[in-house]
Each structure stands twice: as C-alpha cells, then as structure tokens.
Length: 318
Ligand code: GFB
Image (cartoon, rainbow, N blue to C red; front, side):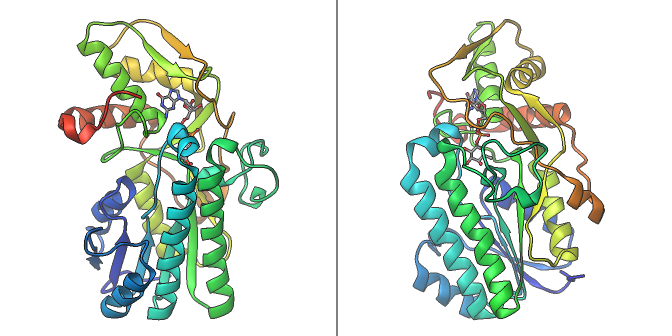
C-alpha cells in the first residue's frame, strides 16, 4: 500500500478535465496537493521542469498533463500530438527520477491498442498489431510513456505505474467542435439544434463504431485507488466495461437534451477505430468498479455544459 496521508502530491495538468477531477478526488485524502500553472512552468521545457522538481520535491505525481483531442484534431495535428506528449512525459518522468519522487502514475489512453485488437482488449494486447492511423501519433507518445515508467522502475527501482483510461467525459470537457471528443460534441450539437428549433443532429462517420465511456470522476477515483494499492510493471485498463454505438450514443444524448428528430451521418468524416472496449478484469480483481452509469453521466455532463458560459464552450463550428 502507498499511503497518501501527509504526502506532497503533484497533479500535472491540474486544470484539464482529468487533472481537475483528481484535484476534487484528492480533497478527500489527507495529503498536500501541489499544482503549478502553465505560465509558471512549461512542461515542454526540460531545464525548467528539472529545476521545479528539485525545488518543490513532491513525494508523488499524477501525470495527467497532455495534449489531447478528438479524432479530427489528432488527424490534423500529428506533430503537435506526438511531440508535445513525448516531451511532457519525458520531462516529468525524468525530473521525478532526479528529484527522488517515490510514486508516479502516468496516464495514457485506450488508443494505444491495435486498431483490430480482439475485444474486449487485454493489457497484453499492447504492440500486437497496427495502430489506428487517425491517432497513431498520440498513441505512440502514450506507448512511449508506458515504456518510460517501466524503464525507470526496472533501472532505478522507482514505483512508477501507468493507467489506461477509456474515452472520458465530464466537468471541464472540451466542447469546441473542432477539437472535442464525440460525447461533448453531440451534447453541444443537440443543445444548439434545440435552441435553434431544429430537429435531429448530424454525426461524423457512419455511426456504427462502438465506444466505451467513463465519467472522469470515476477515473479520478480509480487513479487514487491504483496509486494506493498497485505497484507493478504492467499498465492497467480503466474502463466501464460496456460500449455503445455512436448512433446509440447520439440517441441517448438527444433524449437527455430533449431533442427529437433523426440522426444524419457525415460520411466524409472518419470513423476511426471500429471498437476499443477494454477488458476491465485486472482492475475489478483489485477491488475497484465505476459508479456512474452512462445515461446518468450524460445528464450530469449536460447540466455542467449548461452552467458553462459561451466562451468556456469554445467554438461551435467544426
Ligand atoms: O471521440 P472521438 O473524436 O475519438 O470519436 P476516438 C469517436 C467516434 O465518434 C468516431 C464519431 O467514430 C467519430 O467519427 N463522431 C461522430 C464524432 N460525431 C462526432 C463529432 O461530432 N465529433 C467527434 N469528435 N466524433 C480518440 C483519439 O479516438 O479517443 C484520442 O483520437 C483519444 O487520441 C481518445 O485516444 C480517447 O474515440 O475515435
């Protein structure tokens, strides 16, 4: 067991959707949460990160900082998704080693797995086949992060672990249709159609891909659970264990928002991976299970969306 009580715990990426959920979850732990703004520390700057870690000396690190985005953003900005994520993870993990950080969790993504991995996807499917082209850049960076954590565990004996969340949603999500993931995008599309008195929404692709979703507060709880009780080389899948088609998701979102009409498909946009349901057995066997089911989570996300101002929602055009 790793006891968080009395520890200085750095959350890298504390203003993001995952980071802010970790801040909320860690408020229930008797630990000192350490954060630093992007203006005060650029995680792409190796020297600055090294100096900050030597000065601040956190005991534990949640590495939730990353450049993230949906299928269109990943496909449009491959250099940014590969370079930024490689530099962030390399700088933070190496500086943690230099500063003697005792426990670190690297956060990756379910896109690390092969496009046609057998479903549900086991952790040992990693590197067993070709990646999905639209997000292989982000996937390669996240695979490198897993390997970095393993390398520092193997060479230096650090208790550095990795968690692989499925598609996430919840407070602080990105509702800019150019860069967002599907669930926030559909909430925005349905909401704006309802306001405009239109019926139905248009989705990208064919609507047939399947996706698994997990509310970010469940993820944060799983991360704290793993930080306290997991200390092994292999990464751990963190998912809900259930998936839906994008069409089923669109119908669920329209029902929550209160919008009638049909779902039309813009087939000029990519479908991406046909399915990426992860096997949740390893984490369940450790004793953790999610609490927020998808429909309840979508309703919570919509009320969060309504509370956000227009500027916080970002651009509406894709
Ligand atoms: O969530 P999403 O952008 O990313 O797309 P991925 C999921 C599915 O929803 C794709 C479809 O088949 C999209 O074509 N979709 C339908 C839409 N309508 C929309 C829409 O309006 N906006 C968006 N964004 N999608 C991401 C990776 O893959 O998964 C990231 O690109 C990360 O790197 C994330 O790993 C967890 O699930 O396909």
